[in-house]
Length: 214
Ligand code: E4P
Image (cartoon, rainbow, N blue to C red; front, top):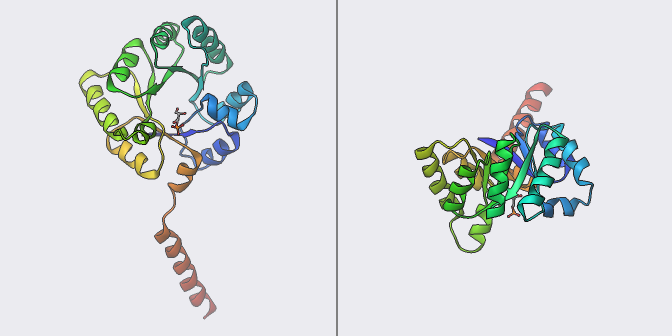
């Protein structure tokens, strides 16, 4: 399973990329607004570190999505145009596929939306599991349903588990065979940690110092 960082913070991308485990970045308008930096510069900086960076269109009609998406794709070969799951978005996905512009469909909340986006030609679909959990639905259950559909249909489209909230979400997504999982910096930072690793290192060091003093 590929691991993506969900951020518009270039320093965070650089930091995790240095671990050698980062496969891509997802951004969205809220994350970009939070950092308050130039959008194009941010995307281009991130493209130096990873082969897949999602840049989201803000237009809601096909013509506007087409214009923004073509512009973003021209910035760098690593850019994936992020398109919202609407009927206008489906038209845009189909158009971008015909132009070999790669896409990620965002705001997927049901299996029928996932199916339509894949059929329209999306390269990636992003079901948002945390936001489903927030309204008492079963986010990981949706991933299980989508992976079952994918097993039967063989779509040329990767399933990206988005809106993750904690490390267990990443482990469960991997067990279900999801292709990609994106997560915020604080969740990514928790993945390498375990208190027994810390206490184990401390003990090894203490024992080693005792011997070396003899
Ligand atoms: C994914 O591409 C989205 O940017 C993201 O995962 C949304 O997560 P949130 O529900 O924490 O905002």
